[in-house]
Image (cartoon, one colour):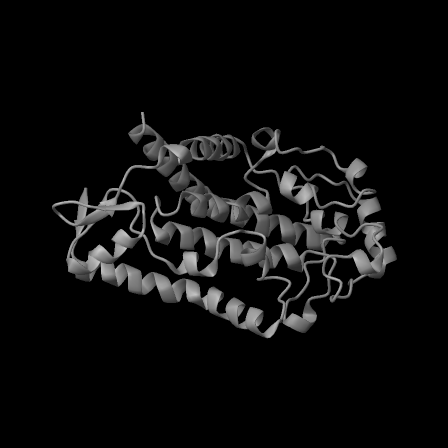
Length: 288
């Protein structure tokens, strides 16, 4: 066990909170005003981790927080008091199946090479042959209009293997996809070049919370922010009013630009996925 003096763990906590408030505070202000942001709101609405929980710091397992102030953590059920200070207890038995399933998915994804040939067409498939009032971000214009958007989907191959993207495809788009992903096939089809698989490292991190260091959760969140921006820049929507330039995947140059960015994100995600795998293995080993 690593023992942190109060000034040490307080410094880590003080660094974490403003780091994530860069994103949580604007979201909370928008929500209070009834405003929407089609790029960043996704990180708080699609992923069920409340801003207050993202801001809440945890040292992760194997760390003892020394000093009288550490007793404030005893208000959280996962923490316990020892002679040296306050530390996390064991992973609750009821959480073991979820951690085991998460490990299977993370290891399967890490075992494959990145595939960089989808070009972000999942967002296009979500509006393919859709009535204007049914389009998800109906407040945003389509860069190429409905007909132009449909033409792009019909002229390129759909190669989406991520179930949580595929399930939002329109009915006419689904048969055009190379695979028919299901939740049951997720570990079989997930691959580390997928933008959504790498955004989902944030989901994996907060599912383990507080049994991972909050710094790791924040690392995964910040990567997800950047990936989401590429995801929407490559979408059929016109985001110029929000200051985003498009990645024109309807052109060969745009597809090459997308694949380069996709490869860079895959490389950045790899060490985060490895750290999450190690935490899962450690937590499960402690329960054997």
